[in-house]
Amino acid sequence: MKEDIVHKLLDIVQTILKNKGIDSNDEIDLNSPLQEHGIGLGSIEILTLMSEIENQFKVEIPEKFWGSQNFQSLNDIVNFLHGQN
Amino acid sequence: MDCCYTLKNEDQFCLSNSLEHYFKLGNSNIKNWQIFLAMNVPGFHYNTLQNPDVEILNGISDTSDKLLDNFTALFKVKLVEYSKNKVFNKKAVLAFVDDYCLPYSNAFKKYHNIRFICLEIKEKSGCLIFDNEYKDLDVNIESNLLLSFYEIENKFDSHAYPHCNDIITDAVQKGYLMPNNTLADEISSFINELKQRSKTLDSEILYNLFFFINRPSGPATTRLQMAESLNFLSTENNTDIFNNMKTRYMNLSEQWRTIGNLFFRISKSWSQKHFDRIIEKLEKVFLIEQETACRERI
Image (cartoon, rainbow over the protein chains, first blue to last red):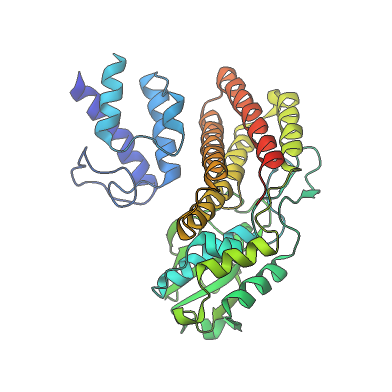
């Protein structure tokens, strides 16, 4: 179950990175920070990721994550999604 | 015209952001909030939904030329204008750009918005742009993307700059740190407009609202900069008299940031429930802004 979440999440991230012009064939570390110094997502891309997660996983991300302190890594997101099931 | 909440004239906040990037390129450690105070730019301005041609100013009473004068006077630097040909040999410059010609801009080929950015020329066909966020663009430097260029004399001479305390003392003496009590009334009008037009808010307008709130000139960033300024004052003067005000501005910044991001969320996927929640949060932030304007004075 968790593997399915990771697989689907990585698909979303890779699409966003591709749209940004970043070739993400390398393995993405789930513990890396989401931002520019980690996976390479800017603030708008992180919001896009959160919107895509809501649409594709049919979940509602709580309001506290929509402020300046949102998810720090993909692992945080995986744990959140896993907890929704 | 559907494109609302955009700046029609030069964006002074982008100027302070660009100046910070510019100084960083020279390893000068000048913070955005210092430039922000030196230029007299607390607050923000915007166009209304109903009258997009009317620009409402908030906390800004001068033109960008006057703000630049404030900046150059306090930092004792001089702006030198360069021609396009000469700029090809320059490593980093400040430039006036038109968002209409900026490929990554939300206003690209939609409407004109002249403002300052910092850029570093890589080669004739590309440049690094230091805008609200870092960009690496393959843009044609010969195009009308770039309107004019400036170099700052003595920009890497940190001895030329005044001490932070001097900047803040100057800002306080000139009244720059006074909260503006007209903002709360404007937020109230804004909420009413949103309620009346909720059925006609398409994704582009909603995205513009997100951008309007989170951009350097927006309330989220300007409130954060105000809190950072107050934090510096507290530390430097070893006092806690600014603590309440600092906390209030930090809270306001976070509230605005969340509202902005929630606009982004419904621009991607409309939800009446989420829209109603935004209105609820705006009404709450209206009360905090009103309270801040009435109670706090430096």
